[in-house]
Length: 271
Image (cartoon, rainbow, N blue to C red):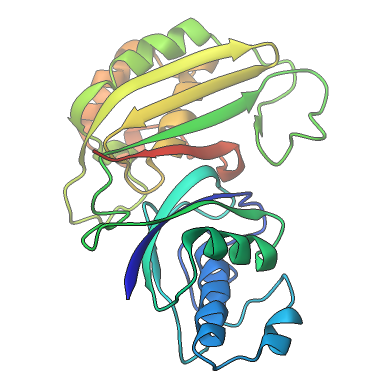
């Protein structure tokens, strides 16, 4: 079987995250279902007529030719992605472009295959990733952002955020640290040390965009970092206390977990 590299964009609003789960609608589950049907058909297990009549909302993953793919990360329920990378092996004679076309024909409208290429036999989307870039968007305007409501965190109307204080606090995050204080899994046994290369905070009109670039992120880490920076922007926490929060390695020291829908995975990096 051939190993493939996939790049997907998706609106995570209605999904229970990226990773496949039993009895839950996930992005990965939708993709695996379509690929499984494709491989079944390519190997004579599903007729062309059946494939022509498949619903775009196909969800059945209980097929003998179950295809497994592996994402570069596990975005939470409600989180979006502009370029999630995944890898997986397929038994098919289709070209990468034909696989991409098939995916986009049968995937729902909120998931798009951006690219499909043949990868090296040892390529693994998660294990080979060297960095990720996430962006969190806040809305600080007075009017309801009706058309953006699923993609931004609307802070209370009329709230004033001290963006300079947020930038000051964010500067302490850059570098290699133990980010246990910002991990949503209190029972995490693996290393919670990560390296953040850069945190960029920009106010554009009624929007504040926070971009986090690091070698990897813990469960809920970007959302907890965001919640903490917002608390600092409100003046509820002092920017100068960020080093103490990091050193304390205690989740209770950090701010709340920001809502998922304001978060988007922008890029996965590889050497």
